[in-house]
Image 1 (cartoon, rainbow, N blue to C red):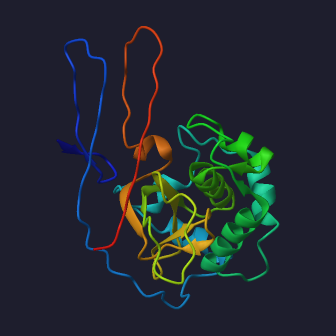
Image 2: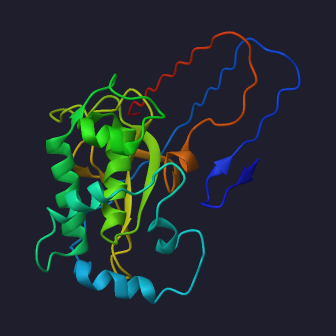
Length: 239
């Protein structure tokens, strides 16, 4: 057991003999407290670069790690063009993040069969459909392209919504959303572009990183013969 660079709990496993099946099960009880949404105290986007330039630290949580392309998320000019279409004069950083998130939710279609875990973000963006991983990667790329540090959050959603509230997309599988830095005073905020909302009590964080590669629930090297299939299930219920 160890902790990775971004502070995620990691368990390394090595199998030294042949096997026919791998089954990972996690059962936990989570105490999730809602955080009230605060006033927008983020700087104008035009001032954010100056605040970033004043950071002299390379600690894991610093925004400088979340500005450039990352291993699974190369940046393309198409993301910058799309992002700039939703940036108005003197908009705050938080306002820009929410505007881009809402635009992606409107312009893209959630389709559980449209992509795989290896589908490039640009391909999903060009087709305008995908799953939560695609929504999240695309939004991260858009934000980074205009100078907003953004990272990937992997986690779960409440399966059964509170009475009177709609069921959120992505509730029956691992979910993903965006974490973006909004200046010294506002800090990091989290936004769910798949559902066009700020992250709240229904979201449970499992891991954070630059992209899916840093926050995948299971990853590694497998030497095999023949075919293989994978399956996963998620169930989050209130107590």
